[in-house]
Image 1 (cartoon, rainbow, N blue to C red):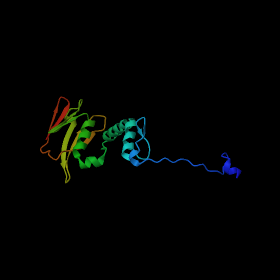
Image 2 (tube, rainbow, N blue to C red):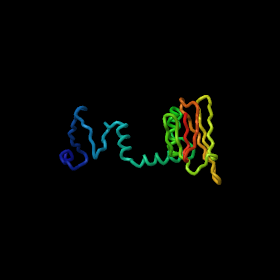
Image 3 (tube, rainbow, N blue to C red):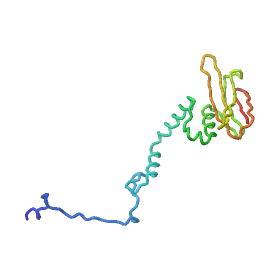
Image 4 (tube, one colour):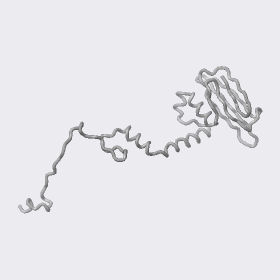
Length: 166
């Protein structure tokens, strides 16, 4: 009996009042812009993580530069779906520009005799190969997909810039 009346002994249980709220009354709890609780959607938590992790964009950009510089294409599945993206990535990494009817790539220091441009048309797409030779170094070789609307290709080397038109 004594244990039932002594609240400091371990044999007694005290009732804890349980509060209930309807689901509509529960508001999303946040702390410093961060979503808390089980009501948070995974997409929301993922977006908040990316906002806070600014360094990830730097890592993505550096990774893309390394892949492109080595001749590989980042996001290959997107490049297969949209070849224009692959062309834009490659030209961008060569510090060039893509125009609606062609592209321009700066090749300062190269001579026109050092540059070879050729095309290949296979069953899936038409490709452009650019080779820039430099004495004492490996050749710079890039294979770029051409847009579907590219027909006759013309190449001009003017003032250290390679202009390609279609």
